[in-house]
Image (cartoon, rainbow, N blue to C red; front, side, top):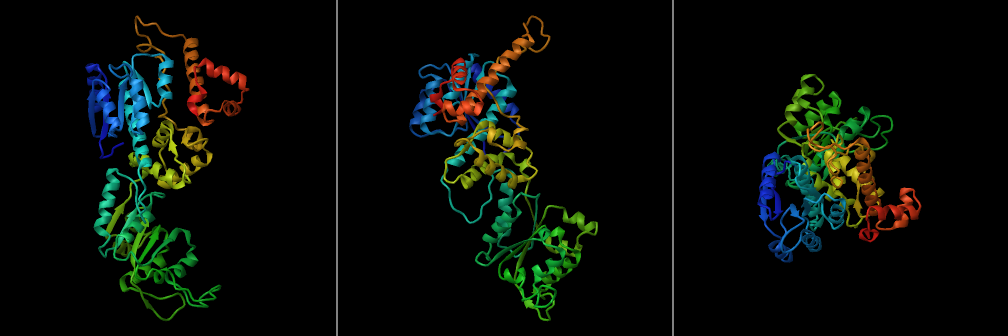
Length: 476
């Protein structure tokens, strides 16, 4: 996650050895992340805190068998309090019924003791991501003209740099991959500057044909070329007094680059086919997804123009380098495109988003969430609603833990190893249980609808639910 805000973890267990083991694993194995750990031997004091509206934890590791108040009872209180904490249940009980009852009651995950360190760390990180997303969804929205989302170190540095340079009359070059939000950063600079009440004009240089870009930038006089039936001012004149954002400036033809340099130096524009000039006062912010310095060395971009633009560089990190911002971004897009519905992502769906490499960056993420919203079966968006390319890369989804199939590892002396038939039976039963729970969640507890989605008749579907002790009412 690599965020600067610490992950706040609460461990509730009456076994000090378990608490020490969890503390050791978490502090040693979670790299590049600050954790704050609080412990409690029972749930009584925690219950009082929940009644008082105090639940500052991202992740709660809760033992099932506690003195005074049981783990499941405390889990109910977490759910009823509206806490955004993700609760991971701990137990030595390996039975599927105990795990399933805890998951139905709202547990984020169920870990059996003794737990594997890697499984514990993965669960804690996944739970922390989910809590952060829920916290963002619960927060009241403050309307802002322009904002950039993210609390990762790279985004904090970017916001600080914008605050420093916005009011200074210097040229700015924004560098970042396609879809990272370069125009949004340019707008934020404009909104924080003394030019905020003047126009902000954005032009994508790569989307304008070479034959028209001269006219688009500098304007033209009537009759300057075929089709020029009227005078056109051009974007420099439109942005006079304000800010002109030139996106993908690296795609601008060299001849047009020469004219642009003159405008920047002289502060005046001459329309195509015109004889007069017009003074303009425009702050130019340029952006490119390519390295303009390297392009200038290869003769693909004018060096003098590069030096003119490259006064202050604002670099936007790609989404794959700031995955800790995904919960906040996901929450923002769920609210933006949810049409007023209180939508959320399932833990497995959020894990899938986190494990994807996002070549299209934030724009691709927003499109993916819009697609998931359109295809969702309820207010909780699961993996089945995500685009296909995300579902095919799922690594983080966690079913209820299975019994260890090969105890102690293959070939361990003295250990009884399951046969292939037995192992397949266990895996098949687990898959069937997980599938039924997901399909019931999508159908919002309707057995008829769930049976239709599963392609089964209602009688056989009910028989499967009874076999796995799944209560349809718990999904309503």
